[in-house]
Image (tube, rainbow, N blue to C red):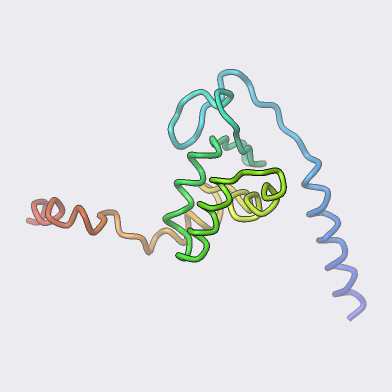
Length: 125
């Protein structure tokens, strides 16, 4: 039990330290979603070096969330007051959108949406 408690404390300490890490973003860095220059808008940068515009990652994350989280994310993004930034970060910046579990779990999302089923039918052999 003592060892488990020490491990948990070490993990908490490591996580707290991550909040103070930094990376350099150059004027040439681009959003990994829209591919436009990153520094033209507010961004998120992950340890893996992926850079995202806030609005791009919010829209990309929405389709991977439960409806209740979707509503919460959209509400937070709409209000983006300083008081809500930590909550927004908890949903959007928990891990890199392209490298983390979100992308792995997206294997269940069909490539063709409901509004594109007619088009998909035209691809059948």
